[in-house]
Length: 263
Length: 298
Image: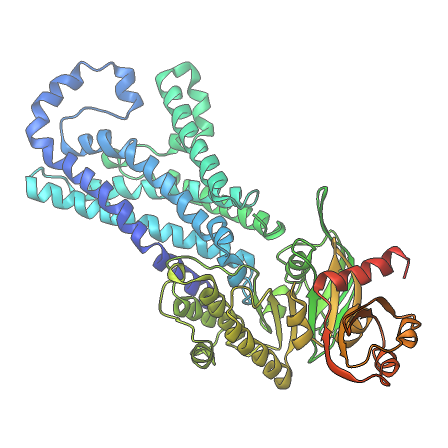
């Protein structure tokens, strides 16, 4: 089993090698730019943020913009990176399942003695690795931006901030697998899960803005995302969200095993 | 023991037609063809056998194993060319081959290089840059490189040029010699006639007949064109019950014959035959024969 899953993971990553750069480079360069300009905008930002309504600061996780870590959290890690990685996750997992069904690749792979569940496991693991690589590229470019500009981004908090995106994005990979249990059309899978991604973000935002509606945040995985660059990774949330992603993938594998392979 | 055995295999898609009550068997070393027009249900039958589609009812056994429960064990022993073969635009045939070899636990590429030379297939270019025919060659190599016990080929010559179609026919003959069982689908009667031992005729999702190829052709109407030196009496020929549509024009005689050709040949034996042409039935004509039988309760 390990050899088959390993071969499938390597093939999946090889197929998506361009995607690693296509997502990692823009996110990394954008993040590096944000970090690099911080020294020149620091003073103006501190004054501007002091005037922000407290609810707005709470909603977007802006505790203050007095250091580069807070600025990176506000500009990249509170919105852009989680949404981008969540969408990448569903795209990646869909390419190995519904995308493979559309190109005919699934029929060829399932001519070999490999079970559908192993295909799903391999697709999910490959997506997890792809997310890590994209986060690594983004993190490295961000660090380079900090070094070149002298912004002084602390390595530990930055690693925690980027690493914390991984389980969150993985949940959307798990939802992508569940969606392939119902449809083998990539547009349907990515569209529906991207809708859930945005809806979860908006629900969490509403819950943060209105304390009376804070209960709705429990249906959103963003509630458990936190602000790891400032507070560190919350181990319980990190592991819980990762387990939820694995549980979703397992459910998706069960559904995928039971369905007809016709788009 | 039959290599493939189905019993009332049925796949329905809601109100849409799939296949219904398909029962047949394929013996070891046999080349069996599914013959039918596009949309008849050939691909559905194959995909149900391969567990890509789960049957609504009925069952299929391959190598004596349940086609659903034991599908992984079954697929270890077969090769499959899906209809309208595709894989991914960026991947080369060699990359696909490498992955399939690993999934099958095979060291190296088996006889893939030899097959690539034989079919003049380019294994190194991305499949998206290949023509349909050249992609099909790669698909054939992926299906056969590991010398399986059973080959399932859905429209295998689709897109191949005539030279490569010939090469394919030879490959199937060699596979049979090797002891491999072959199941293929086609809408080309000539192709089926040349390579298959038996044929299952599929119409609107139902297997309406399973025949040996010779019997199939014998039942269908063949057109005979004769050029006679003498414009003699053809009453003997006209009187034969299996001869129809007899026409004479300027020494040329046309008629259709079904079943045993020998009696028709004997009926014209006393004439001086200058030339003779026998046209095999088209697929449509074969189907018409079976449709008539079916409608007549035969």
